[in-house]
Amino acid sequence: MNSQFTKLMRILLGAILVVFGLNKFLTFIPAPELPENAANFINSLASTGYVLQVVGVIEILIGLLLLLNKWVAFALVVLVPISANILLFHLFLDIPGISGALLVTVLNGILMYKLWPKYRPLFN
Image (cartoon, rainbow, N blue to C red; front, side, top):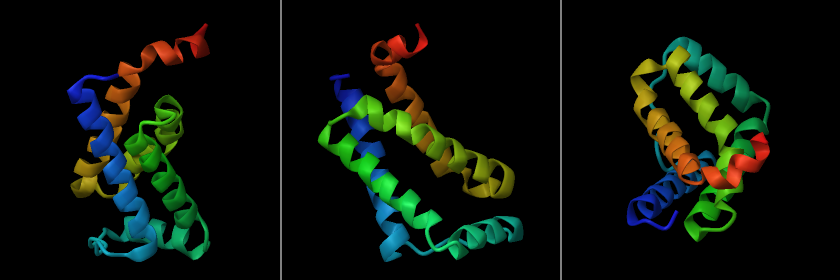
């Protein structure tokens, strides 16, 4: 996991997660115009008062772990359901915005592949 390419992917993924996690609190990146179904879904999550904030905190924590190179294997496992849901949201509700979701999912998958020896005991 120490190659320059892997390090760059880890830092890129960590930075993406920190930026988009912080954006859930500080809103410095304006939200794109979403199709009606996607907007309704996001509005329903926002109306709970906690779901988007919890996801934002988890994204920030995972991003910091990746940037600090601490507990990377654990952080990537915790990221799997988040990246899967981001991808599925865009796949089913906002296909034009899927590029960022694909980037996060692919980076997560590649980094997990690079760390596969750490996950092997989970499947024995």
